[in-house]
Length: 457
Ligand code: ZN
Image 1 (cartoon, helix red, strand yellow):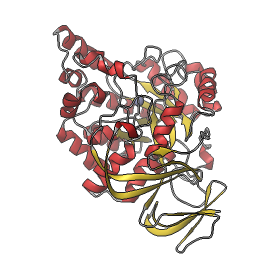
Image 2 (tube, rainbow, N blue to C red; image 1 turned 180 degrees about the horizontal axis):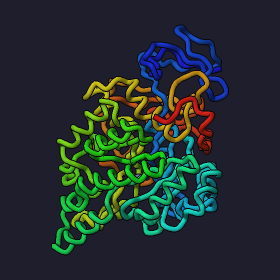
Image 3 (spheres, helix red, strand yellow; image 1 turned 135 degrees about the vertical axis):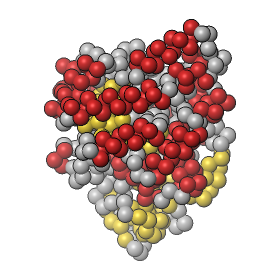
Image 4 (spheres, helix red, strand yellow; image 1 turned 90 degrees about the vertical axis):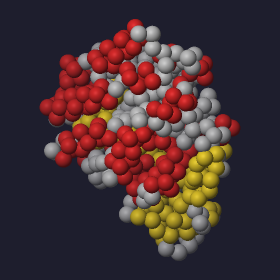
């Protein structure tokens, strides 16, 4: 047994000063006094959080590992306190829309990933006959786009395919994660803005206005409700979107919602100032909407906060410096996810640590079917832990970043709350911002619904 002494442990019910014992990679004991162990980590004066479960990352490997890859992506995860990633089916080649492609992705991840990983499958125009086999093979759910995705091969779905897919996934007991923006509205707006010669950064937001996101959320909620399919709305950027989803949930619909750290820490004005490094879809919104989103998060109306980590080579951002349409849309954010939430949530907005743990770990683990193995500090769970120096102030520097391309919209920004040490199944994988472990991440399948302690939130 190894143990961690008397840190402030963030348990599902609150924060307690306690010791934690680890045996065989799992949490074996929680005790008010010190525990014996052949190795003892002194966590006195530190906060111990459950390892972050990031439900939304793009590592693009195989096929586009020059954008990121399982090696650098998982090192960035580890250094930032993310111990489980749930990786998206698109941007890799082939995209995970068949079992063959799933196996190719598993082969790419094996021996490279420092952290544990689960995989989303994809629902595209022409792969509905593959959904059942992908579900059996162990994906934790499926992802679909209602508007054009960032890659040609991952086709978006119009309502006919979307509804059929929802019905099939309902029969399979699977969740559909959906990128909700109206293709009709975003395409029409983009065409008109481009025809008018607009290339400035504000044109990006004008092409993807709130109504495009809200209309799509409204529509997919209705379709999922009719199909009786569990739904997860990814990266909602709007408080009005959260409210629509909350209304459906209050009416009994099985739907969850995530937002991303960048919607909570950056605004459209930041995008105008920073440029392509902060380009994403849906776009960054204004300060009033950001504040509304914070209120929704603090009120418990948002299930989880993710990174939507989606890097690219530096030149794919640079070519959009003076023409916003030319820049790759995606934010490099997995390593800054926890620091941003500590800084902006815990310190600036007094978010309780137990709520932070729910938003960054427990709820995502439930949505992905990884609970109770992942997502909380509790006896029997994997010993995935983040030891944090909560008060330490530091600045984001390129040298700290572990991604293949060292870019971040948060470069130079002061943070409060330092990720000191990170453990995956009891093994230290990162310490003081440096990766120290060998890649030994494991593939996680969703536990069968009947084995889950809790139903999805
Ligand atoms: Zn994404």
